[in-house]
Amino acid sequence: MTVLELLEEIEDIVDTAPGMPLTGKIMIDSNELLEIVREIRLSLPDDIQQAKWVKDEKERILTEAKTEYEKVLVEARKQADYMVENDEITKRARKMADNIQKNADDYSKVMKMRTYDYVDKLLFDMQGKMDDMNMKYFGEMYTTLEQYFDQVGRLLQDNREELKTLAYKTQSGEDEPLPPAAEEE
Image 1 (tube, rainbow, N blue to C red):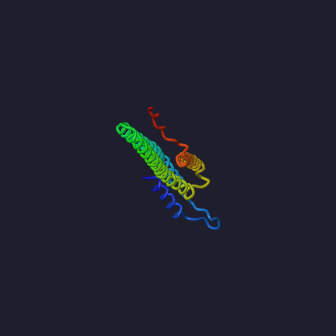
Image 2: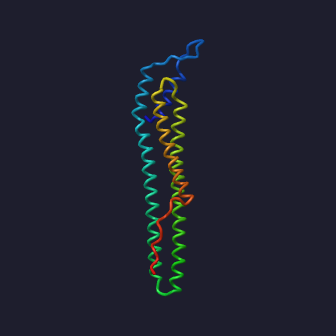
């Protein structure tokens, strides 16, 4: 069973438990509830694996964007070198290389921003799910589990903040691309 299914089972137990008159409290089988909590603990590593996958996916996407950026730069340099035969062609080649590099920089920035948005959305969704589960299902009797959710939530928030910092640096130009090769004289 998944964590959500187990939590729904707890909710069903609480909803169907007999109430104690005048107290607002209910009677439940503690062994049954503790068994479900054990199953939840066993299922949690899957959720942690999903968070790790999100992080790994972020790294893979960033690496691909950097590789694509470097390929575009190499191709731009090759085209510029090929066109250097006389002064007029050299001038046009430099202008074209500048345009290609600007386009590559713009493309790289767009790819990074899309990557940050994608990973941020995954992290935000995961953080929302963790917060929803924490608020909906756990109270005082699950303090240890609540602390675990808080820790995972902080980790997700830290990862989002790191992404936002990288996005800000990319947006503001602090994440400068590699400088063009020194022009030969």
